[in-house]
Amino acid sequence: MDPRVIEEIEKHFKATYGNSSSLHSLGQKAGQVLTKSREIIASLINAKRDEIFFTSSGTEADNLAIMGVALKNKKMGNHIITSSIEHHAVENTCKHLEEEGFQITYLPVNKFGLINLKQLEDSITDNTILITIMFANNEIGTIQPIEEIGKIANKHNIIFHTDAVQAYGKIAIDVDKMHIDLLSASAHKLYGPKGVGMLYIRNKGFREDGESYIEPIMFGGGHEWNMRPSTVNVPGIAGFAKAVELVKDEMEIEIPRQTRLRDKIIKYVLENIDDSFLNGHPTQRLPNNVNLGFKYIEGESIVLDLDSEGIGASTGSACSSKSLEPSHVLLAIGLKPQDAHGSLRVTVGRFTTEDEIDYFLERLPHVIKRLRELSPLTKRKPKVDK
Image 1: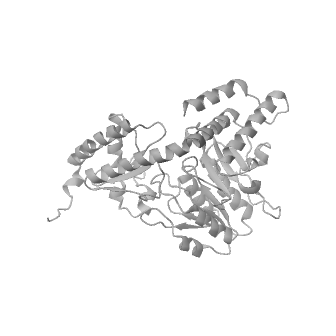
Image 2: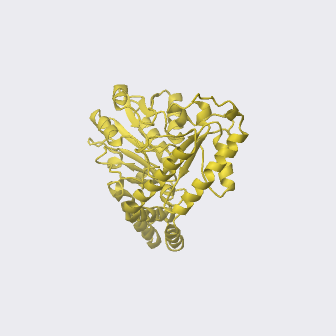
Image 3: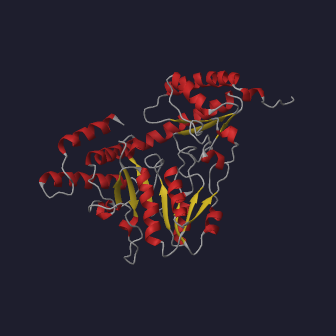
């Protein structure tokens, strides 16, 4: 978290501890903070204040969007369109709905991680009730053509949801211009607290004819206009709003700065480390995301060696899991399993310095060299006649 966010949260833990639904003065004070926070968070995507519904996470927001639309509209149709590279919060929700009798189309992506717009439109049937395509991929950083997807959905009168957890606060989003009906986001992706998320719901979930197009998936009290019961986490939401304020103030500086650091890493690695490659789109990607592949070694080994050097990174591989399966995202963009296992995701951010990038680029070649010397896969590296 940004220290300024922590300071804001601490202030509200001490002073705004009432239940925002209560009639007494403490509750009313909490309600005022909630209203102001809702307005700030909505402003980042050109939404209305009352179209923001707070959740505990981006995952919950995804579940509410997809399950809520599916359950409400199942008499109208049972077909949902998504992509093959969605976050598990969307992917596994769709798989659950398949078990409940819904038909799910998983659109393939090209080598950069982009869906085909014609294929999307051709997949629409009379039974299609929802299109859910992520704004930007959490592993490879590729940004989808959201405005064009929104236009297609709007043209066919289909509800459009986007998982924008990775994009919210990092790139410009306009829900009206992009024809987005539902949008999921999470506070911790922009230096806010974990455990706070939100779902944007256009027109508070009502069609022009006054009929609702989404219903709650949890039941309890009347919080969040009966859409999401539970006593509202006012301090956490206030921290979310503070994080949004900081993002709005610093976005013009941070986007080009992080993009420059991102591209510095990519350029150096591809020019100086043999058998390395970039995953995701070279330019149509999040400003803070780098996903690289290294042949003949496994990502977990790279992550552990970098960690011993004081560098935190991650991998798209799941070798440490029981399934021993590589990332579904990397397989979807066409990587062979052995190459997908050698992936490394590096993210830069607000607090990343040029010196830290230089240190990373100094240590990474040594790590790759050492691991390749130990790897039996290197010995099977095909020889190329020169």
